[in-house]
Structure formats: structure tokens, C-alpha cells
Length: 290
Image (cartoon, rainbow, N blue to C red; front, side):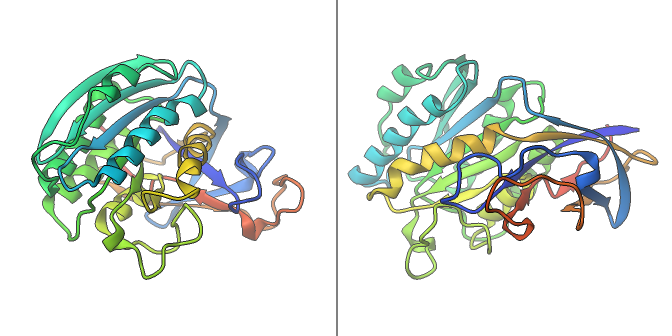
């Protein structure tokens, strides 16, 4: 039985926005599901137009500075993708307030974003996870590489049934979660120097992003780094590989997946990079066969 999953190859920040590898083949990777090796039948670089669901926190906890930063990001974000990329939009506070279906083009959502303003209700855990669930639904029939892009001023502070359910929904649909948070209470002391926080999970929603094969970005709502966030996020979403995996038998329950680079393999890196500079981002779960 054949299943597919996606993988993104990341290099160190500041070196290059693009993938650190010139190409990738089945000989370069090792895949295990629940500790058992799985054969890789195919490796293909992304070629189809991407679909991105933007999930936007419009809760009243946002300051004017934070809201201006949020609108700036959403306005600029689509311009860094290929022209045929499709975008949908979900806005939430303590519940889902607005949904915009998939639109194509770098300015497709401008008119909708221009009409948005912070609501009178605070964002909540229920609103956050309802927004993510709506974002998955808006993408429709699953397609390799589908992604959600969450912009929020509030992060969930504890484990919950909603968190477990959204992990299952993301895994089942093959959707990766990327996010930007302006929740300064979650910064571990001084704000990180880099935009991508990948070494340690500080909140459950950040853990959800990593498990799905996405990334979590934490930043202040001002400063020069703010302009770099959409630019750095787009190539990570858009430049991915689809792996065709051959399973010995159908999965009857969700399996834990691990993907590694093969030591001593023939992978070709870009100049001035080493294997230890390369990070693989991929869904950590392979959902049960349906």
C-alpha cells in the first residue's frame, strides 16, 4: 500500500532563503513508522500551485501596534508566493467571525483584510482551535503541501481536547501549520535573535505546528525583523518534496513517523553547507488508512 507525506529541507537562517540541497532522492532518506523501516518509492519536488489557509486572530487583546503589524503581514504575505497560489481566510476571536473561500493571486485577499478590525471579544482557546478547524475545512479536498498560516496575539497555555483534535485533523488532511505569534508573555526571556524557533516547544500550539511539519515564529510587533517574517515563511511553505511511501500493510491507527538523512549518502548540498546544517521538517504522524 502506498501513502504520501511531505518534507521540507531547511538550512541555517541567514545563509539562503531557498532549500540548502540541490536535489533529494530516496537514497538520501531513511523513513520509519512506529520504529519499522518503510520503503520510499518516489521523491518529487513540489510543482503544483500551493494552497494556503490564513487564520487570523482579531481578538480585542491586540494593541493598535500589534493590529497594524498583523495587517501588514497579511497584506505582504501573498506577494512572496507564485502567482497561481490560492489563499483562503478565516478570522476569529472567541469564535469564527468570518470566512473567505480560496482566492487566487497575490492581492486576492486585500479587500477582505482592509475591512477587518479588532473585535470587542477576546481571543480564546475555543476560538483559536475553531479557527484552525475552519481553516482546514476551507481548503477542501486534501492536496499535497496544503498549509495553514496562523497570525495570533495569544497562545494556548495548556493541553486540551481541542489541541488533540486539531492535531488529528491536521494529520488526517495532511495540512502543515505555520504560525506567527505576538504573544510576548511566551518569549523565553529575551526575544530569540532568529525568526524561526525550532529547538524547543514553549506552548502547545507551537508543538502542534511542529508535529504537523510546519514551523512557529515568535516576534515582537515592531522592529526590522517584522518585515522579514512573511518573506522567510513563504519559501519554507512553497519549497517541499512529496514522498511516496510503501507500507507493508495498512495502518489501523496513527503511526509515529521519523525521517532522517542517510549518513554518507549522495545528497548534494549548496556551497559552504554541511549535513549538520540541514534540518528536516515533516509531519511526525502518519494517519491511519481510511
